Image 1: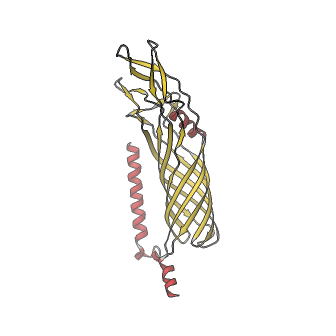
Image 2 (image 1 turned 135 degrees about the vertical axis):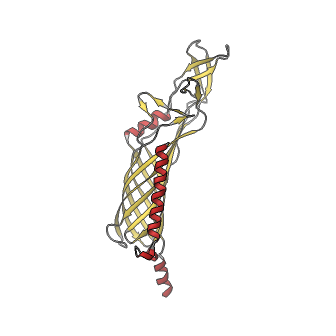
Image 3 (image 1 turned 135 degrees about the horizontal axis):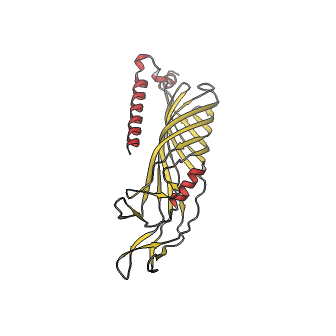
Length: 284
């Protein structure tokens, strides 16, 4: 948690510094009226690296035990189970909206990214579990196993072939944060530090951490519209997943793991006129 707080504070400080530096037009650092805003939407095919794919299938399809009140004795008893859920794919569709600005060949923007929820449907409405001591059976509810992510990256790019060329290459890098949300299959029991049981619920559990992204876009620009094909790599180092304040660990797989993806996609960008362009248009 301390690492996350330090990271977020550092990001806010960097944003404040960058905003102040760019806003000082009196110093001649840049010509403010030549800045152009832009907004874009995009979608991509996002392939998961093997560790990430294993992470989602191992953690998302976690098959835990149950501690229930025995219906005959009224005492707590441990029940075992075996649930079969379909495996998640090793790819998903990423959706994006970029909001930013360009000054000559330099671009900076915020990439707001999210994905449709991936679902492994429950095999039945209830699961029959067996008591490990008495052999008695009970029914527990099952849920669809689901996961999705969303986040924001602050990106910095450069137009290699000039500011206004029809064909351009734009390499970029960025950093930000990403949040992954996972819904487990049932109401599992976990032992806390004091030896008492805590139970998962019918809800999403989340883990968040920092990201680093490297990207290259091939763009066709017909001012004010641009169409780009892009591809890249995004690294996420997820923190441990906590279930009701209890860190979920499944031997031999730890929930503190990478969430790396490679991706290729298509985006459409609308570039707004700068103040200087508007003034020139008014003179005509």
